[in-house]
Image 1 (cartoon, rainbow, N blue to C red):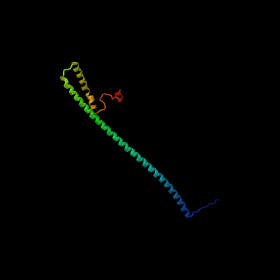
Image 2: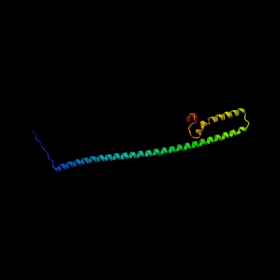
Image 3: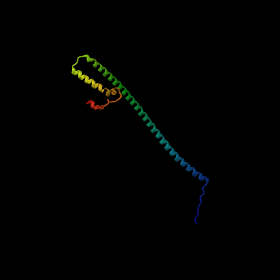
Image 4: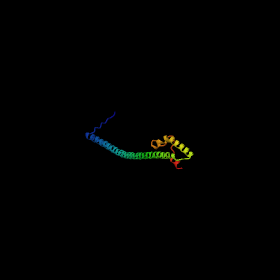
Length: 147
């Protein structure tokens, strides 16, 4: 038949073998731990950079919004001033009615002011800063104004 050989290890040999295995496993775990620590540091570094970029973007956005608000306020003040100037000019022109004018001029002036009064509702929200363009008018590009 067959001969079975049984190897009996001494307890010292088993302890050494288990200790070597344990040390090998610990070394492997230590290497993994070091690799994970490096990855963690890299992630924290990228997170810090992203947070700084986000804070910078928010500061830029806030500054831009403040600039737009200032520009809108200034535009509204200019528009109110222009509207007041137009009203003063209209009163001044109306006060000239006592002057004797040629009937055709009087007729043209009457037609003109009728047209102005007719278009005031379209222009008033624009002058008060409530709209970007008068109601019913298309906004022209900057290039159309300069040619």
